[in-house]
Image (tube, rainbow, N blue to C red; front, side, top):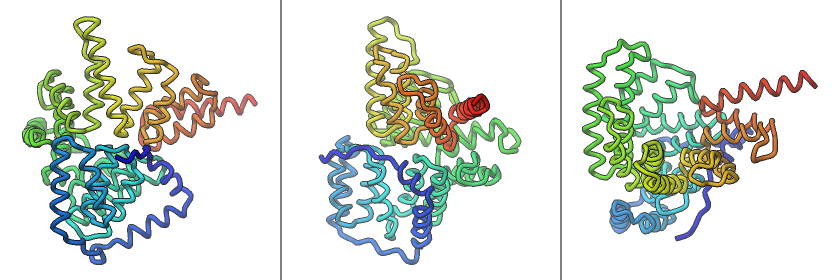
Amino acid sequence: MTSLRYRSLTSLCLALMAGAGLTLAAVQLDSWKVDSARNAPVDPVVTEALGQARGLQKLGRWDEAAVIFERYAQQGHPTAMFHAAKVYSRGWGVAPDLEHARQMLLRAVQYQFAHRGEAAFELGRLYQRSAGPDCNRIAVEWFLRALDWNYRKAHVQLAMHYERGLGVEQNVDRAVTHYRAAAEAGYETASIRFARALFKGRFGMTPDPQRAQRLAERAIEALKRKAAEGSGSAAKTLGRLYRDGEFVEADRKLALRWLKRAGHLGDAGGMHDLARLMLAIPAAGDAEAEDKAQEALTWLRRAAGMGHGGAMTALGRLHLKEDHGLPRSAAVGWFKKGVEVGHGGSMEELARLCAEGELTPRDLPAAITLARRGASLGHRGSQSLLEELLAMEANGRSRG
């Protein structure tokens, strides 16, 4: 299997800030109309091969499936491009490469095919994972295009963007509209979020705990079916619900079970959450504690290898505290990797180290840049740190 180094979209979005790239992106988006899309080539042999590749993925033979998707993607088959892009964006059997995934998806959406709307959705998700002030706006454009192409899961992400004002002007009414539409379309995560908002009476809604509980219970039953059928994302959501005791009784054993299933199904977020929960649960003795810690670190490294920024940040923090015998000097390397994939937590941690001159040369301007990038992603720790750093800079100037 060809080894590809991990590449993020950070450089792309920073280039968009300059203007030329932004103009190009807008032209491309406007030019891909439904009525001007090319018809996808039809080849029963390719269809069968792609079906076999999907089957290999269910068996955990990720690298073999990746080879098949890449082969037919290079031959110009949009369905293969779509699946290959998911492989590279998630690190399923290959080293994650977000830029390669983006190029595959941009080629795929020029065709009229079954996964066109989902391909636009995946493009939006890629831009969400990127740094730069324009990336959220571009993500919203792709989610809106996904809706145009009848992929209703885009409602989930649009609701979040309007709720937080990311890439759009904050608008809670539109957020509620998208949450409700996603819940009605049967997307369980949106149903849980909408139930959460209804339970607490957010967005100006009248609190209705009973209706919220019923809505959540229906979503949970659907999540269990999907997790049993092989959905890592569904298993992850179930693990989080049982971990937090939200709409169900808190149960660490069930949380661990569902998160471990998510990890085995290749969900990087599930791996990260599993590791964090394992590290948080007290062990019976020192030997057991060390075994659990090493298993948790293995899961974190697997998630980080798949491009999960939270796992990279978690590993950096563990190194920083020298937990489980980890060398403190390696913390910066993990935070730099987290910054490369656009994780706000790593931006905050690395900014703090730069500002204090700890493990890295003191560089206040670099620290401010990092904190500002994290703040632009809506990361609260980065936002608070940015205020501190700007005050520190102002004080330095006044003394000068």
